[in-house]
Image 1 (cartoon, rainbow, N blue to C red):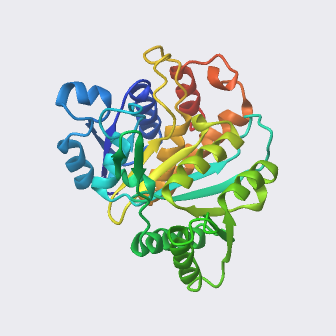
Image 2: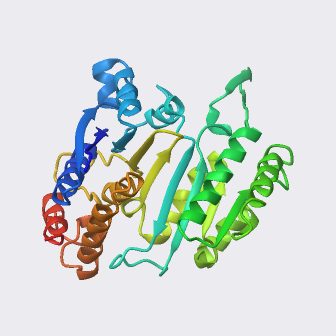
Image 3: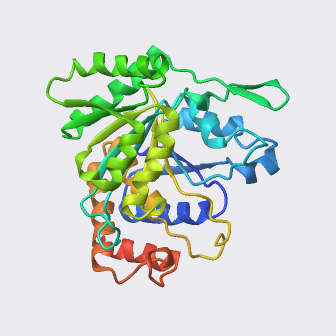
Length: 334
């Protein structure tokens, strides 16, 4: 079996700890992977003068697959987010966030099984802002036919491949009739190519209300960048938070699988981090690489540990540290 190279980006805070745990689990699963390390985030900025060195971008381009820990981002000032910069430079146009109930993690909801597909390259996240006059700032919302069509097609193709039943377009076209109207028009055109899938349209504020009332009514949801950022975190809250949700940013020839939670500087270096989010993201990566046997091996081990409930990290109400939780996952594979 051919060995695939994976570029691993530790990130900041607890990033190195959850990445180390994930690497150990992947090795225990006997995944035919070779790991190389690259830098991004605030620690990289201190050493390289930038939070995303060219060498990191080149490494991911060469390997085609990256795994990334959380990176710190300044609020209101400083460099552009390393996350946003990486997506732009690699044209990782699709954010894929499966959100599924985790056995043994008690929440107000059961049997949640949603997928958020978020356009990654434009909308208000294009960062086109300027000062009109002192005290007045203008931000430009950019929506294009090309990007909207591409992300809608990605959502429908994913839904078909994953055996899903419905794709919902999330919008605010009742107010932003031109920008969101264009997105919705692209969705309708793409939907015609997938007659076997149900296509529906839902206004974003109504979606938020419906998600907290009855999340089971949704399946795959596709949306613009800003809505996706908000809705993906809302959905994570339905199943226990960002610590138990995986994520991926996918382009035409490159994909980066990441922990979507923060850097947790208060526990960094203490061996208390929960690696579940990155472990679940690694399962997505294995499936992406068509290493389905290894993917199911890791997935079953995680499921077994959570169902038994004997070994839990502190954020989930247990007492296990990172090393103990990682060992439990590895032991569950033997």
